[in-house]
Amino acid sequence: MDNAIGSVIAKLKSEDVSENTLLFFISDNGGPLAQTADSTPLRGGKHQTSEGGIRVPFLVCWPGKLKADASQAVVSSLDILPTALAAAGVAAPTDKPLDGINLLPSLRGETPVTARNLYWTCGGDEGCWAIRPGDWKLTAQRERVGRSA
Image 1: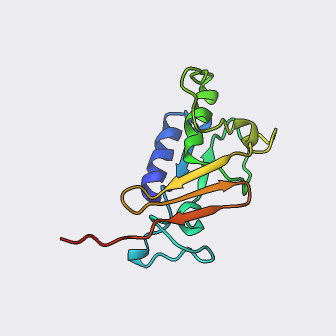
Image 2: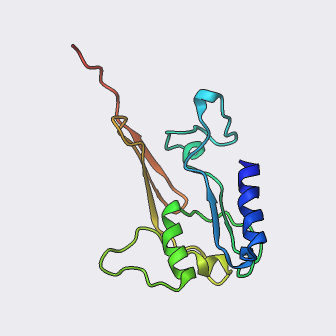
């Protein structure tokens, strides 16, 4: 992955567009426990709603527009589209509101990330879900019931 990301960045630099290119890097979920991933000090991993399954790095790079910084703000991959639209100067649709928020004011240090509820689900038959309002998180998992033939 390091080589592939390095190749993309090298290409952007060779085309002289790296300073004005907005890049996002994010993982889709925590490490796969089946391959002995360890998310310590967080609990859980891939396909789980515990912090080890949903808390992942989210990096934004736009060298010509944003200064390097770090934050512990809670954001979502749903924030990529509204942020990219704002960066491109394109208005977000008003007839179909987006679930994410524009992070540019926060990335510029102008405002904190807007507080909102975030939601997760495992999908499929697992029936697990989580909601996070601020610093609190509620999780639930439906008990699996065996099927008889």
